[in-house]
Length: 98
Image (cartoon, rainbow, N blue to C red; front, side, top):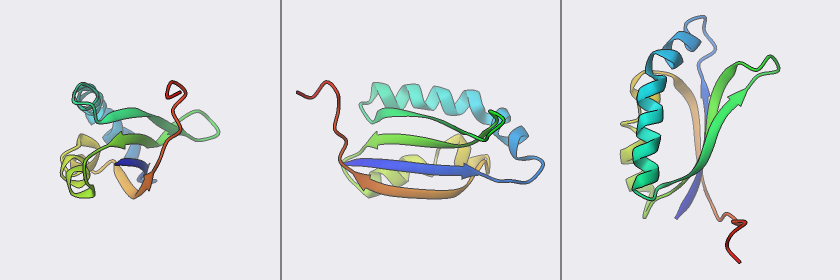
């Protein structure tokens, strides 16, 4: 099942520092997620000045429970970066699907 995750960082003065402190670990985790076939696409949400303020992820997991298990271990969760998160089931129309 495919999901769209939209996650906004905190808006306090230390939010960017928390993001940068765990960014490399988060990106490494995305590599593992991709290798396992769960990561479809994603990236940073930017403000008008080009600063990272959140993330979007398209992922594929067998169930919401599996997604939640992974999500709760992501460095952006454990590092208190993402503070406003929504998860929505989706069905992507992939460019290479037909």
